[in-house]
Image (cartoon, rainbow, N blue to C red):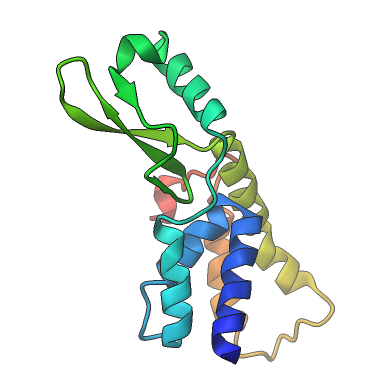
Length: 165
C-alpha cells in the first residue's frame, strides 16, 4: 500500500510539473527492471491518461491550423478526447467521405514549456558542480563533468548541437 501511495504521488507530481516531466515518467513507466511494479503500473498511466486540456481550446487550435471551421473539415468529431498524454490529446472524427480518423492536437504552449524545461535542466550540472555541498573527491565528479560538458551544447531552444551527438 505504501509503494502504491508513493507511486501515485510521483505520478501526480510529474503531471503538475508538465509535459517534459510527464515524458520522463512515461519512460520510467517502461522500466520494470529499475522500479517496483507499483511504480511501473502507475507511471504507465501517463501514456494516455493525463488530464486533458479544454476541448474548446483544442477545437480552436484545430480550426486555426486547418484554416477553416471544424464543420468544413469533419462530418463529425467527438467532444471528448479518446486519450490525453504529455504532448497532446486525440479526438475521434469522421470525414465527409465516411473515413474514420484520429485528430491529434498539441497541448497549448508546448514548445515554450519544453524549451524552458530543457534550458533550466541544462544549468543543473553547473549548479551542482558549483554548489557548496559539492565535494571534488566525490565519485560523481566524472559523471557530472561529462553531463555538464554535454549540457553546454544544448541550445536555449532545446536542440542538441551536432557535436553533442
